[in-house]
Image (cartoon, rainbow, N blue to C red):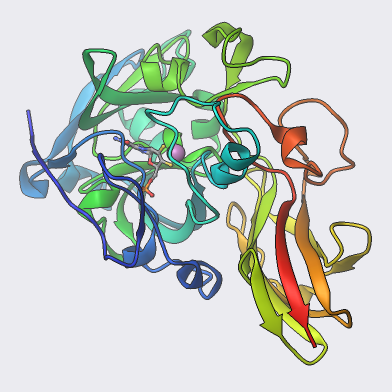
Length: 386
Ligand code: MTE
Ligand code: MO
């Protein structure tokens, strides 16, 4: 068992939940960097932060593998046993932009766990570690029927009078294609404690919740994890389901993140004095691959402008693209800026209303009662003065 510590990041971060600590970085640290500095990376915690001694650290691999094993961090880092991998990838919480659903449709969601995130519950880092597939292979491979891989984090949290270790699972098909990493480095430095030191999971393109921090056990199973985080949180409900008629079985577990984007500057309700142009900045991301095209509008979505390729950061599989655009503006008065993105797979949204391969138009088009994955076009109002 572990000791737990209280830790926070810099006071520049916005607290979206006071306890446990959940923090969102200042906007500038998002749009100014293709790679988010560690000190500015958002934090999503369900419980306390375990204090783990890396020198003595080991984790167990058990369940439906042929040779269950205990593996020390030193072994995992031994390149004669496991080849290393480094990959730049974004991590996005399904709560990103939840504030828009809360503001338009107050009273929904599970208030205890649904933090009111704005556009900053996303970040991009260079992760270093070992592909989980190599670890499963080291343990003799899967037994027949092994289909899901469950992760346990050393943190504990309380829900309805019970104490749980954080636990989630991903289907083995995601592991098989080397899209699940056990990582001990973030941007060339040891994982900060608040991000999972000494070892965390990173699942490229999936909802942040699957990227289990403070990993201490891996369990191969036949069905998805029965743990509450897997079964009860991070469920996406169709728009006919509300707070009073939901059961966990009439929603589904969110895995791949849909295409989404956000305007980081200017701010909602800014008054801007300018000479015919207003600069917009933001990010775009898709858990299916990468953003292919980003468009912005100044009139609420009647006329769209394509952000030119040289104003999008480079294309990296499973990473966001940050962008900027000088919007021509001749009017004085209220403008409504919005952004939408197309990804490489022309994926649009979670539930099955056709939207031509881009994001849903309005908050309502992507509304779901537990307020996850706010992937509608991000809209802000700005007062323009020439
Ligand atoms: N892992 C553990 N053990 N405990 C947690 O509370 N939160 C998850 C995931 N892994 C969590 C966890 C959620 S919901 C998200 S969005 C990401 O971690 C956030 O990772 P970060 O705090 O490093 O940004
Ligand atoms: Mo999350």
